[in-house]
Image (cartoon, rainbow, N blue to C red):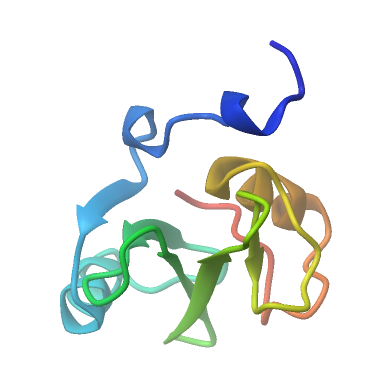
Length: 108
């Protein structure tokens, strides 16, 4: 696969992608799975087209990280975060380097 920005991985291919989901629904899904450290899901923002949310468990709490689509087509957590070609690539990075997240997203 080429490393051009149009070739990011499709989130809908991943079992941890839940489509458009409200925060409360994401919390319920993760809490039903015991909200163990590193348990996560990826969802589309209900309120902002093109944005995603990484919902991640730590200390039995769910943290929600907005993944913004930047002007150049890449994505990042926050406008000043490190950018990636897509949300799946962002998650793969943070699975190895938590860099500011409460924990690594390691349990889909």
